[in-house]
Image (cartoon, rainbow over all chains, first blue to last red; front, side, top):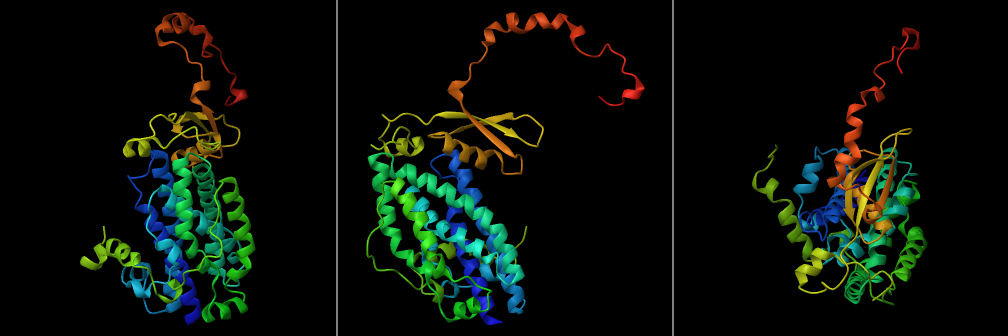
Length: 249
Length: 114
């Protein structure tokens, strides 16, 4: 059942990498309140990743558990979206990245909750509620950053310009997904695009920000062609299990 | 400066060495109702630029362990507090009126728990 393994792994990788990125803010967020908020969102995402990795390991049937999948694969074997591995940058970059992802994740999990695969549907039903809050959190912040001071507006617009080319990958499908979509197991991401556009454009309008027009879109995460940032992230995230295999506490 | 430019991310502004002319982020008092039928109880405070953000911050800071079903946030500036220097006048006179405690009444056994 290789396509189901690949599909589950993709979802897990995006959740884990974004969760890890947000965890990098701990102790560094601009406000104590945001330190906790970003930590909460990170924990939601890492929780989603754990459930998905555990299921992927079961589907694969090779005895790999969630730790093996998270800590013992190299960058080229990760299947996450390029968007989620982009560095945190300033607070505006982190919030913009979160908005672009969450505006997709929320309708995605809602649709996946109807999957004919009972395990994916159950994981999605839980993740849908989490992603609804992630979207609200990022949206409210982006509105205030965009429609705030000249400084915050400039930072938010620069973040949007830099991250926008990574949004196209959210809606890509390949042969692996096409087969699962036909079986009613996977969600067709292209069908979520109008919903995503509506959500994002409404928030950008209120934030007085403008999406760049006609930008070329980046691609490659689904086939393991990543930006240079993922290797650095993994070096930090995987260090302990690489240096002390099987370490536990 | 836009419509929402009143408050700043103060730690960031201080770190950047500029923007200190902006207003500090207002303080909000947080109240949680833990179950249906109970009253909202004060649990602490958060900093936030406006009411919607205060509600979000309150959720993130004070409901991480399933503490509540409902949240209130109130601007701290809206609270009128008693003066600690007046505590003798305010609270001392009740000390001698122990008959106000309902401990002098016999409750018939048939009534059960009240």
